[in-house]
Each structure stands twice: as C-alpha cells, then as structure tokens.
Length: 210
Ligand SMILES: [Mg+2]
Image (cartoon, rainbow, N blue to C red; front, side, top):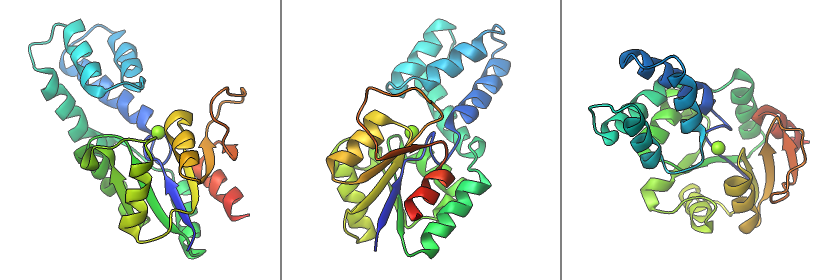
C-alpha cells in the first residue's frame, strides 16, 4: 500500500493565520501597542525554537508572567484556531479511497500538535501521526519518518508533502521518498529540489494520483 506523509503546520493547517489570531487576542489581553500584533505574528512565524520566541516576547513587552505560561497558553489555544480547507480534506478522502496509507509527521509539542489534528478532524482522515516531542527526534532526521512507518505498519515508500524545504523536502529525500513542496512562491529556490511544487495539498494530491 503506498504511503503519503504530510506535514501539519503550513501544509494541512493554516498555522500562520491561527498564530496571527492568537497574537491579536494576546495584544488585546495585555493592552500592547498597535504594532505588537505584527511583531508577535512575525516572531511566531520564525523557524526557531518556540521557547526562545516566547522568552523574547515576554522580555520585549516586560510582561509580569513566565514565558512558559505564555507558551502553554498558545499551545492550548492553537487547536481551536487552526483550520484545514475543505479542498484539502476532500483530497485526503480521495487518497484514502485510492488505497493509500496516510500519516502526519510534525515537529512540535505533542499537546498542541495532536490537539490540532483532533480539533480539525484530521484524526479521522489519516491513519496515524508522529509528533517530534513524543520521540525526541525532529524532521529532517530519518528516524521520525521510520517511526511513522512502524506505527502504520507499512513500508516507508511513497511521498512526503510539506511546506518546508529544509524539514519536509530534505527529510523526505533522505529516506528515499518522493517529495511535494507546498508553496505559493514562484521564485526558484536554492534549497533541496522537490519532485514537484504545488500551491495546496489538494493540488499536490491531484498530481500524485495522476
Ligand atoms: Mg510546516
């Protein structure tokens, strides 16, 4: 049975939109300056450890609260804020009907990542998932992909679909998967080459099934 592995944030769910909404609420709660929403949203979109990001936010606005508490609040709220598009949902259903096994491999904390998978109903559309904090290994390390194949009891043979060249495309290539890079960027990239690029999961699945 062929295997399709999806990234979560920025691939199956609109992480940036959800993070922006969290930032909007946070700015309101603490009555921060109007430009704080943009600055915090930008910080949350940076690809660096979240503990550093939240420590930076607390320091910048001199908030009388531990950074861990702000990070925990963010993780608690994100499952309720992310969305998965109807088109992408339909694509997962098509893929499954065509006999594919479907998994999610995501870097992050298990409370927030598994929370998002369940709250969006993606848990019903996939066969399983691995969150990096559960096993202490992050993409692009091969072990996280092998762990998913073990959990699904399938061969690690198929596709990796994700929005990060460094994590998803590079990681997928390292374990011999074909790769679809989810991007709306038309500029050619200098990173690892994906098998193809597509703007959405639904588009990528259509190409894979063709
Ligand atoms: Mg991603």
